Image 1 (cartoon, rainbow, N blue to C red):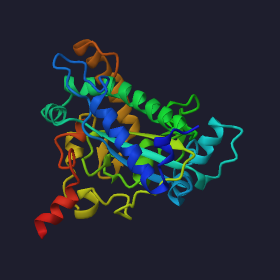
Image 2: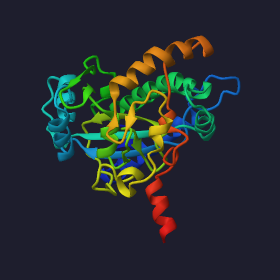
Image 3: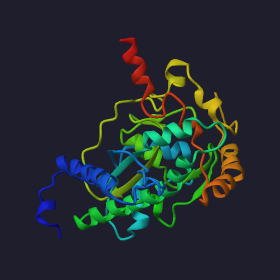
Image 4: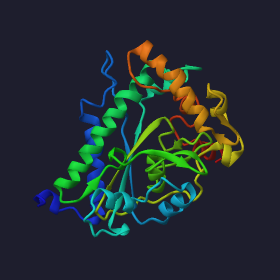
Length: 299
């Protein structure tokens, strides 16, 4: 049963209500913290976007990635086996959690291993994203809508794509791309209006919300390498040599994360996790869309 406040929400303003609640939660939750001496925030003001569960881009991505990637409706039906929902009955609610400027600046100074702020954001910030996902699911359930956070379902595992190697049942970055929040860079990171130094999250709900307009048609529209044939700074920033003009080698990247940065983060900072983020910091796209910036200069 929905309360009076929730009954006032329509398709037009429901998106604004959810966006405001997500932003408020990020501003006020004590869990949005690096858990350091200064108790600095892990994440800055989030971006929120929406897409239809039946958006054709999801099907195109599934064809491209192949197994194990699942469509929003497939995840929803696995989560709610008795549902009669159709793909277009669903909305994917996606958000971007940008790193705070201090974390970006600290990590930009590093050349081979993550800064302490970055390692803390990776560990404690990931925990906050899970808390935020539960908050959004509970918020929607309280309002009378069925919802699930794909990343935290028991079946959201890592498999192997014949074309791309390591691949997940659900991609937060791709959900954000479909939801109008950014495009992909040379290193596979998602470049958003607030840059590439960020984390993505999402929830799939049986609710109809107006989709966020996508201000791009090219999946690499915000990357200077693809649009201007310049930059490629992420290649030189990668300490593992996992990035080249051909793209991102996930296997080499993962070996460096598990073999080098994980032991370092544990021994230096007492955090049982891994992290790097050098390709996300100290680059033109770390905190903005650099293509828009270049166009502004040209004008």
